[in-house]
Image 1 (cartoon, rainbow, N blue to C red):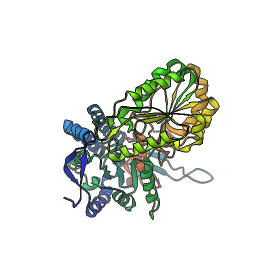
Image 2: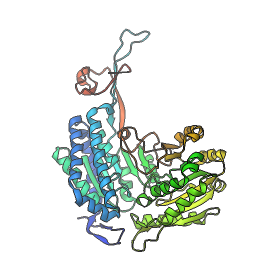
Image 3: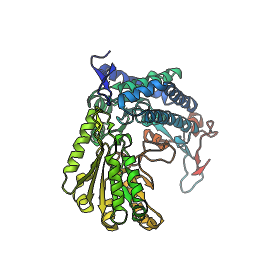
Image 4: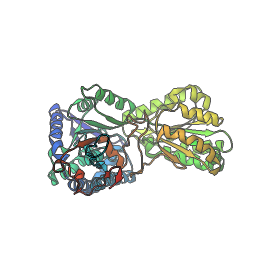
Amino acid sequence: MSAAELYAHDPRTGERLEPAHPIATPDDIERALALAWEAFGTYRQTSLKARAAFLDTAADRIDALGDTLTDLVMAETGLPRARAESERARTTGQLRLFASVVRDGDWLGARVDPALPDRTPLPRPDLRQRRVPLGPVAVFAASNFPLAFSVAGGDTASALAAGAPVVVKAHSAHPGTSELVGRAVREAVQEHGLPEGTFSVLLGHGHDLGTRLVTDPRIRAVGFTGSRGGGLSLVAAAAARPVPIPVYAEMSSVNPVFVLPGALRDSGADLGGAFVASLTTGAGQLCTSPGLVFALDGDGFEAFADAALAAVAAAPAAPMLTDGIRAAFDGGTERLAATQGVRTLARGLAGADIAVACRAGLYLTDDETFLAEPSLQDEIFGAASLIVRVRDTERLKAIIASLEGQLTATLHLTPEDHALAAELLPELELLAGRVLVNGWPTGVEVGHAVVHGGPYPATSAPATTSVGTRAIERFLRPVAYQNVPDALLPEELREDNPLGVPRRVDGRRD
């Protein structure tokens, strides 16, 4: 047992949850880092079949935890049973998806440019390329997704799939959940005879543990989901190393929604209710919560605003994850309400029976105020959103040009809005990583085509995604082999391609 301990608290009741969880000591941290580096040489050379089987077993082990895990998630986070169960399914689904990616081998990026000794004026050497893992990865678990973006979440799954050992910094909001899931993955490591350092979990207070991980020379990349301040501090620490490393940080987004005139006129009231349903999902503690809505003034605007107002006023309070998150939410809504030119439309029910309660908030302003006050773009993590009444399409375009990078941007439209939407889409694809039409940004499908990323400050690495199969690319780099004898080449680059992986030969699919 470490000298220091940490307790979880039920955000619904405020009750301290037993047992205590040990905080990692300096010796614990050093051991995890040393083992991860020691494991790297072996783990990265595991066969595709063996690595995929390990990921499948990790998923099976987590599924086998059943209600024990679900009940613990609910106790530590206040999330309802349906959310805890769906998140567990998403977590194990991600692991199995990456197992299938590993088996397929396309992620290796195998390319072969055969030698052309008779080419003039100069012969071409034999060139072959594949991707190799960067090295051990530090993963920072998120507060708001105790499973899917946590110990065995997408960052961990994609790094392990790439052949990189993982050291996880567990989130202090759900230490028991982290320990339970971490144990399941470690059991899979042992079952498959992998090195002990392939996977480890550390728990710690404050920034000391995170800084220690990011600045250690044995860590070669970082996956992070959290606040802008936290992400930028890690980016700065990684950049200040003698050998800088990449930090893939998903940080802040207000996920603007644009309601175009035809949709507003035809479905204003329905859209207002649907908007609030998205806003209040998970007490708004989602990185894709719709924090800004821009609606062109005209037919349907009042119906939209009135329906949203009524839905927020009737919204029950919901538990927030921690006292710190609730304090930040309350501070953000107070600042928003006090901003000149902003009017409070509605607040949700108070929820006096919930220890750490979120009271939803809805606010209204005009385009002139929004463009003049940059702070109105600030993310408020929780169920709070600002409706902006926009006078015309030129103002709408000016607003889009003023916005920071986002994870998502959403258009609500009808066929009569297609001409305007066609003008806006080229701007929105430069603004966000995912553009939606006639939907809501909450809920991220895990698959091959999804992007969960975007320009700064949504992420620190806009060329990547943290969700979906392309997430593996963050933890890989290309290596070219020139005139290397066939017997010395990696199997996927040999002439007979014994692994049967997809390859490009002289630029064409093999």
